Image (cartoon, rainbow, N blue to C red):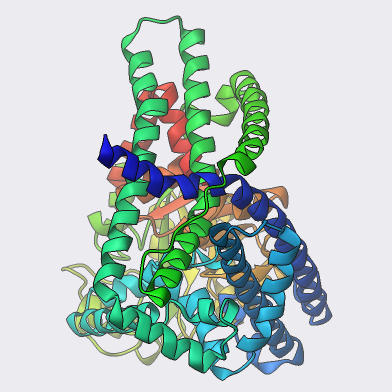
Length: 587
């Protein structure tokens, strides 16, 4: 009983703080939303003045070579700096007021959080802010911000690092280095906001506090994470898993079972959303408590505010209950539209036949067709004598052991190469092999991907009367724009790692997105403009299932068989599985 009281006392301050944190998050997110909207409008005006609707990874030079691009970069950095500094500083002010017994004032939190930005307007302050905004999310540090919390290392770069022992070791060393620097300076913003120190003094104080209390800091973090995880797990078991398990074993009428499933899954989603909303502020509150404790050399005591906060729970409960009733009713009426029992996503083999076939070969194309793929993505480059052959890399070294580039070789020389015992095919051979069987997604690749290639490829596609069986794609937007403008009868696709602006308005039929950038909002915006979405290259089971349950139009993958098997298995899902799978695509 005594241990239970201790745990209750430790959790009580955080539970009491939830209504104030909830109100704070709603208010500040609204302010930040307005702030970002205004900056976004300004960025779009600058883009429009340059004749562009978006900046993408295929047009990054624009940012460094035009006054509009340079201004966008500078304004973007200013916007990010102000956002991060304000977001975290105001959370520290809120934590201080919650812990010290002061009356929580959202106006004061916002004002003081904004005014404290001034002490970060220097080289060291900028470095601190950029670390929190850009490195912390990648390193998995909890003390990050919502705007950049989904920041990631692109899949193709991560795969490149993982495939090299040297680069993996260097990446591991860099992670440890940046983590240690982050932990050592954990209390730097607390020193600036609470103690009104300069950034240099705040950094020295933070390093001293962490050095003197590193064992306790580690223990407190572990205990905090375990406690919160245990609390969330308990809530999930009681409110979600047990009820859903009971529904599955009882022989309830279909309508009743569906209604109860909708209710409990919706409840679980609401709990998850609230946990996400409260997570960072609660952790900041814990770190602020440790800051006070380490400074005074003893455990910081909270003031009990149970009576003051009780009404806050009522308002949150009422709002949540009303939202639940409305949501459950709407979901039940439109269940099949919201959670389709199957998928319409087309499966496209990467580099010919994916990992199940020889790369960019005729047999690879045959493999993709035999496995049931809708399409096959291939890479073409021009030879020295003007022919088009298949190859992905800048040279043939990886696939055929020849270090020469396609543009340095004649067709005859290329045909003497062997890719796993097979000749390198020409573009015309791939057209003939695919005609009437499988859609070709033809990537115009390498240094020879120019307007001559575009004109020649269009001419060949038309010669074989395959306009409706080919999609011309490229990482070079200027090239895709040229094709779409001059050959509107051709289907085109632009592949991009990242973009800013009105990406959906780019001049093409398909937009190919890297996995992590294919969010539900981006997909919907592209569809609203009448365009289609490709995702590349989804190879893991979870990734494939995620996008098969999403609204994308095509999935480019190296593992066609597994993707097709997963697509077939979707039809056997229960109502619960359909809801969970769909929710994952929009969270």
